[in-house]
Length: 219
Ligand SMILES: [Zn+2]
Image (cartoon, rainbow, N blue to C red; front, side, top):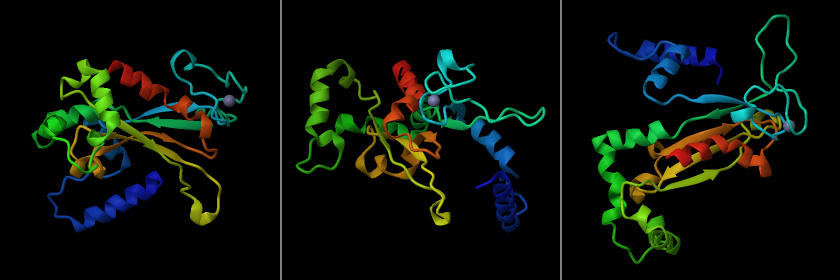
């Protein structure tokens, strides 16, 4: 959805609401609100051929160090430089902090500590892999507040109806501290990365996971 379409949609929604409503008026205000809630995202330029991202020591490079593809599209006049491809990265830390900040969710973040193995497989905590992890990393397992995460991704074509080939890959994080009734619900599945197309990242997806891996190392 374009910014203009979002603005029009917001104005229609607002027209149905009472005059005391406090909904943001446009895309810019909504973005500002989200940033204030700690739900902002970072833009990281990437090579159009998925070789590398302009991150860390390569943040100021002007072309791909592997395939030499230029970072930016040809500049028109004195206009702003526009990158060929941009990775959207949504930091995980503020989202996890919010789970512990709210009394509605904080108590469920230690659900696993009281969970007793059921005879059925209803949660990853029932799996042998989980129990093996606890045995091998007992210093991590001893504190129920330590966060256990799952990562999943899949590609889709947002332009499928138009027949335009395009592969977009969102990367999601699931929080397995939460009980089965919560961990697979939308509010607790966090989008961590949005890898735009048109080309699918396929075997180079690890290139795009770098900011997430760096953040997980700090956590
Ligand atoms: Zn490249």
